[in-house]
Image (tube, rainbow, N blue to C red; front, top):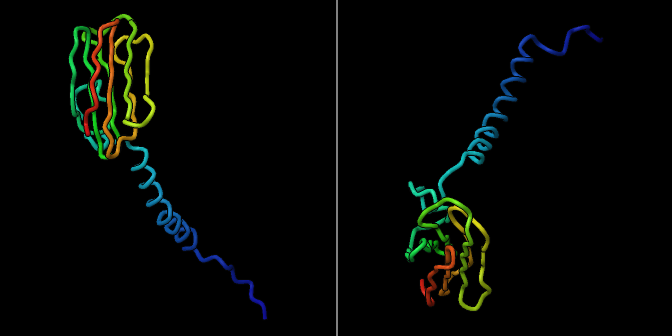
Length: 143
């Protein structure tokens, strides 16, 4: 015997919405967490030029700017920052791990050159930075 009873109850649309909400809410929350900008492992500082991850390790000052080095457990990072930001001028930053090739960023910049990052787990690095022909070079450091 077949009956002409509807298969959907009056509460079926509400149940579908609840089921959809239970599936979508955790997904959307996880997506929001992934898309939210967070400071890196080194934390955020007020210094706008600290675009490198990690903690500030050394700063080498010279006549026209400074070379800033940062370090995490696995990586080293360097940035050359002009003392007086303004018109574009030749700037260079270079960072080389012992036994590896240097990472170099050179060109005409107004405020900073870099960042450059190299893998430096258990390795010394050497760095070079210059602004308008004046610069500073380090020996093997951060060993």
